Image (cartoon, rainbow, N blue to C red; front, side):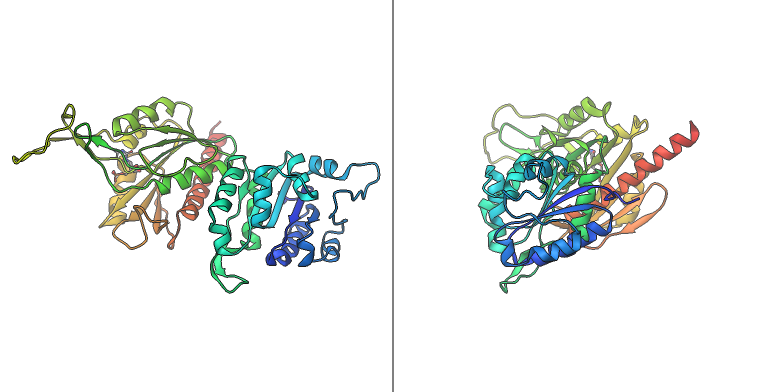
Length: 407
Ligand code: C5P
């Protein structure tokens, strides 16, 4: 049975040129067994008509706050209460701003305030409008409040510009609604490590590496979207903390290990995306060491390997690591998978353009302890996070099945 069967979806359509695509979304949801109530804003009606949606959904289409199709019900409160998901697709910059401040000046915004259903938002607009700090700020506010965004795709826009702003395709939007209805990682407690570590040399200097933390933060954010309870232990980064995750900030590898061990008992899955410094200065100079003509030799000692330490006391947990390599990628990754007692490792060739440190994209190969391998094409770190979490879901399901069979 599909997850949509018997579910009530409120589909808000706003005034974007992509409004016509909402007809396809309404149609697919209806075919999958959902009851779809479409709400059109005044501006949406300039692009599409209620006749289309009424024919597709076989239900009245709502426009006005004072429409009362069912006489004894106050429409907006009734609809808001029975909705399982409020999907707004396409969502304009204007609706994002209204939702962010909590305006209720038409039926859709009133419904959004009156509902406790999960909200899924698929924006579509001109690239400059999408990238405008005001819009991005509103997106962040709504994400922090728990809305699930289906980010716009890149492509040729109606205005002739090329860039981000195209409404995501219907399957992507439907899969986000599915995630909202049945979060795949609900009840899963996930620990993610991210970013670099800094190993102090003196009061003002440290050893570190160029890790931006983007990969680990993308994993944490995506896992929250999928219903996981996420603790993110992060080294110093310039990134905003992922909405909905518990964030523990650390500086050195030793601090990262301590923070991980503190939460380890209450964790089902660990994904170690941090680029931990392998060495630290044996002695930390007190205060700032003055500049001089003589050489300065710093003796380095190895840092603890956090993931290996966690792997030694693995229990029934799923452990996932990363292997950033410049040569013999798969061989080295395979070695780490075994040495650290992992279920899965993400091999990452950091010598290639657009992959690894600082980039927004990544090209990785997944290697399982079972010997399976999957090479993924160049994709955004958010997409890598999705693939990885899908693999984690599969591993959790397999572990549960094994446990069930042996019980
Ligand atoms: O540094 P290495 O290539 O061995 O890193 C592989 C994996 O081990 C990564 O997932 C990384 O986060 C983790 N690691 C760790 N503690 C270290 C070094 C690496 O947890 N000291």
